[in-house]
Length: 129
Length: 110
Image 1 (tube, chains in turn cyan, yellow):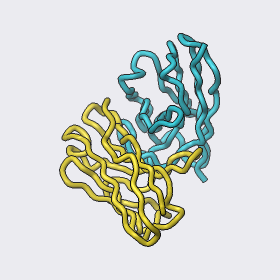
Image 2 (cartoon, chains in turn blue, red; image 1 turned 120 degrees about the vertical axis):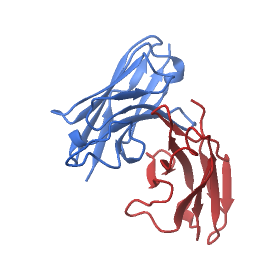
Image 3 (tube, helix red, strand yellow; image 1 turned 135 degrees about the vertical axis):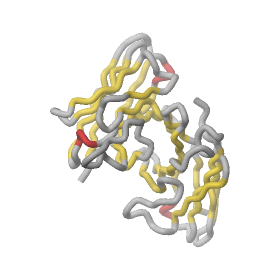
Image 4 (cartoon, helix red, strand yellow; image 1 turned 45 degrees about the horizontal axis):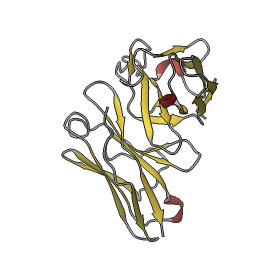
């Protein structure tokens, strides 16, 4: 069974930093693209960042470009989101999600995942003074 | 990155059919078949319900179907059931190699 477990959320002051983690199990972690999606309280889903299946390429929403960094550690089956220069509008539940389709034996899609087949339960980030 | 346009709410009675629209541009919905739909219950994570415009992941009832015409994608739920009451989000790949979601539609089963 695929499991994704986010952690690292909490209360942080504007301008501060936070690193989110997403521990994965139940699938071949290194073969799948991964994504962070957030949802502000009472609002809709917002795509934040994507990481290609090989891990070689990263993609960001304009709203977080230059402030957030997505990365993965295949040895720990963990996805990260380093968030710097946080703003009040970054307040949200942050979900990690796995691509519905993984790398094949011969190739890996190098774009951002766009079918998010499994999601974690989310971690809440509150940016406030 | 502007969100795709969805109606804020739709409603229907048990057994009826409803359709949720999702309008984008030629840079997203109209330019690719990489459209997906997600179902989200309050306080829960979203669940992939439709991918590649028309395909259902394993376990999703065939009451759920998707389609697309031009820049507009649609999700149809036939034989509406009480358990279908949830928020629904469309999503599309964009030319900028990013992903955009719709604003979400709250489905009420009367």
